[in-house]
Length: 258
Image (cartoon, rainbow, N blue to C red; front, side, top):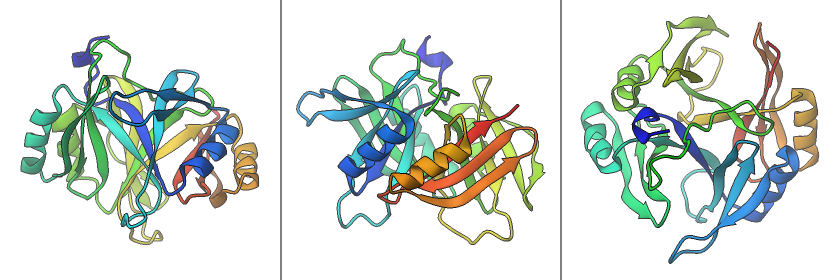
């Protein structure tokens, strides 16, 4: 598939973690991921997380003085990283890490949206590969979500940069939910922070597909993780639970029922 047809796709996720070895062991056992290695000329080999659709992520060690806990950060496909960086600040975002090449892989930069949520821009060296990595297989990222005080100012930012299409907001848990499509595929949503949820820095959150939230959460806890939010129902859709890995990174488990 040509790159121009995949702009705005979530194509990769990096786990920024304080303990790579501990994190790798946790996720490999929790999701049965395959852990391989990618050789990058001039750099150390990188561990690659692989589920049924293929390689989709990697761990990155955090420096001890990094001002944030362990977390996942997504990569979003663009046709030209440098040109997109030039557009970002005019639309209310910021370039946090300027564009840099990853030898044999592609070019990337880290930006924040107008609310402060961070993500990578990415242009691959292979312009014909399948870049849309949202999928429903076991252990795969099946949904992306951003909770903010007010999603409304963010919609034109993402629509202009990536061509995302947004649904009308619908009530959810005391807030509002706005879903979006990427090139015709459902990919995620923006949640307006409900009144009973404390204010917090916005961050893109992964939902990992599992056959059973109950079994997945129990297994995560047994592997040294924490259940931050117990099993919760999304009517006519499925169940989710928020977990924290042993290094502090949070993500959701999701069980589809419809």
